[in-house]
Image 1 (cartoon, helix red, strand yellow):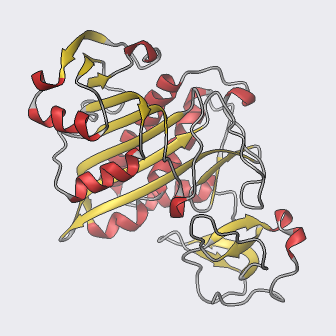
Image 2: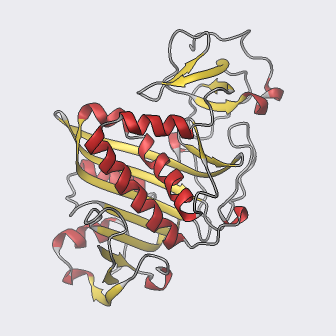
Image 3: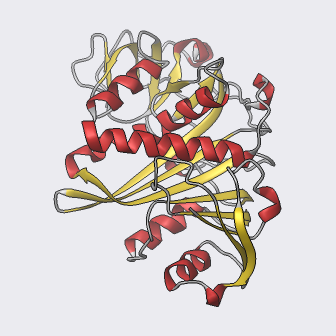
Length: 330
């Protein structure tokens, strides 16, 4: 796997880095030049190689920058739409940066030592019908990575639809975008924010009552090492999906779910800056299951819940009673 970076001193833990040297951008192959310039790098960089952290030969490139001046997820999504050609599966890591965000544009705070990763997988050999399963991939990859990092000592869970919690504290969030052409998925873009060494100062809300990091749970690791484990997990999960379909992925997602069997409140999706908790939730009930399209199946509710923002009922006690029992979402 080829590494392009402006901070080679930060790569400790990223497998075994070898054959590295400083180069000019214009000396790179055209595809690497375009990739580096898209991600905001300067005119000089460090290029090296490392053993592939995923399944044999899976990852092609890792682009690691000291600071991203904008959301790498957004710029990569725009680049895919405009036809940028990737040499193969590519992981992009920013040690710090600005403009990071989660679902619906909600801000994600960058903090020192944490993992801010985007992964692009072109031509993943998946049928278009599998696109609805892809939001599960990065969430399960984080679960797998934390388990592998700790020898299964820590077992994070998934709070619908894209938050990762450890002992009730949020440690990660994920995003997914897909590009479909005809009956095939032509590209996958995943964004992962994982709190490795720092718990950002996030004001508590019913949706995120508390935030933590791996270090607070006793895990001593680096951002680069965490990236290696996440990349390995992403590669394995994608290979499994391509070989066996979405069934095993859904089983794993359900097994890691923190919401099945729990009473929850579901609020309408918000735009950046909106406050949802000033009014009662649109829906309250106990989660019976998660469907194949990741919609929530609630007891007493005929129509599965396809969208919304979820909080556990015990975190919504100060918000009023909400509807009298389960009701259909408006």
